[in-house]
Image (cartoon, rainbow, N blue to C red; front, side, top):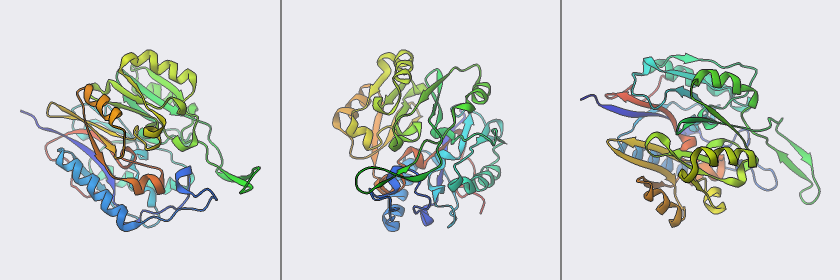
Length: 323
């Protein structure tokens, strides 16, 4: 019997810090960049890695770089075509993301690690911002593309105190839709517009989970009414609407895993018992992990910390990527 083992990317947290301050979680109400508790972050990262390994997941570690602290969030590295297909890595394709300027230097690191693992790479139109599976991911019979206005991140004058505010914008340009539709055709793509800068990626407001990713967690306030209508029509009673408290704790930023006939959803801790019960009612076991330092300081939780490469035959590539 062929053994297939889920393989993921995780970025070594040795140099995790807030460099660009590119989302609302990374700065205080005064706009000052937050300071990371490095010891706590490393401990939490190790806890998530170990929990994934306990579930049978193979973790491929992206080596650290002091100039690229965002490497701890490899969900932005890109996306893999047929991520759930049981194929050798050399028969899949990974499309590298076009990241915002403060994180653009990460691309060469992901390229080196994935090439060493034997993954064929492809590129998107470099003129268009597109931040990987954080904004483009399979959900049931569809792919979801989430997008929002691309802004020059800056401070602007504002009434009140302090007399300024930070403009962040979103991270994926809707203009990339036609290229992405061609890549995953004939699978239909649902285009969903984001509204809240605190939920700047789709994987902070939406999470497809369970066998075939048929169920969907969704935070209604984070997307437009047209986007909500599309999701409601596509998922029906398989859609779970998140309440604001669970959404603020990034319940949607969870990692789905079906392996050995069982389905799990690895989630940030502190979620409501009602939500956990709803997940169990779908035949999926929720597993909570504390990664609060990554959410409170960097604006990314469980899923942001994981780049999904799908099932790989046997042991998969070496645990540590190319130096």
